[in-house]
Image (cartoon, rainbow, N blue to C red):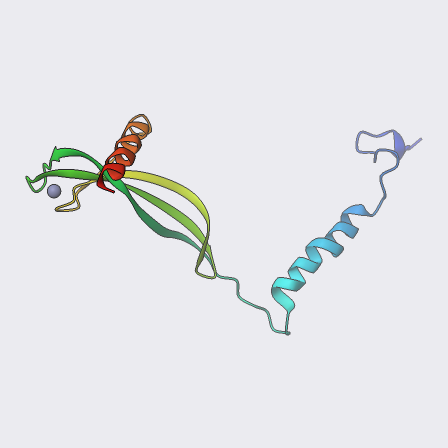
Length: 130
Ligand SMILES: [Zn+2]
């Protein structure tokens, strides 16, 4: 005798039979409509990667640059890569810190272990400059 209710894939009691379809039609369906069907023809959504914002956090310490030979206060730079939606940076997905020679812009990656110390130095030096 075949008995569907006893099988491993049986619906738990009380679950409405059609809820996945209802969910799809009411929510996902309306989102699709909002994004694609407004004013008739299908619309293009432009998503992008790699929009980069750079911030000079502050001067850190005097170093001799192996690239240009000058000795000056190297700067801590914060680079953030954003995912874009219609060319507007929306979600940051990658952050990098670099130590940059102020003369020739040679840059060296800052490790996670070094970062807190450099950030503290940059803050201190900026406070003294003000
Ligand atoms: Zn340099």
